[in-house]
Image 1 (spheres, rainbow, N blue to C red):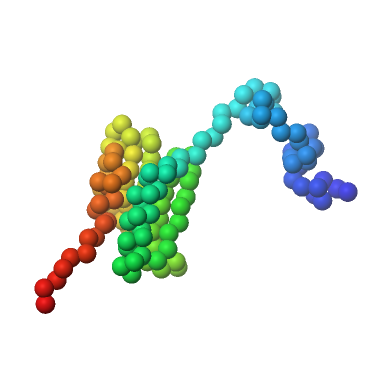
Image 2: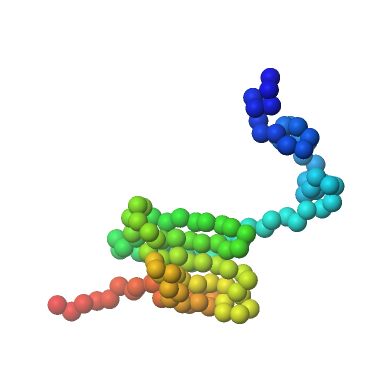
Length: 138
């Protein structure tokens, strides 16, 4: 059986990647044996997701929004809101920890890239896109 039949190979040693034993003690070692930096991914915590999903649920019930997507990278976490799946996002709620001490970690970004609001508290930041239903006299 060839290496291509067994899975992807590690170019330096020719070993099959998924056959390599996983040892938690040295799982973050690079090929030279020294400790490699563990890439961390920025994500929303449970409380942040609850606030975002509460807003999202209200807007779906009102017929304003229909879909969402979440992206988690090493730099920031993004919650994108869509009116239709095939379109550009209406809004992006972003969490960027690098900006936490400067302008605040959270921001709401409009479709063309304008930052609608930025700050350290998620609830205040997302209030810019939270349209409360109003009673209209008629």
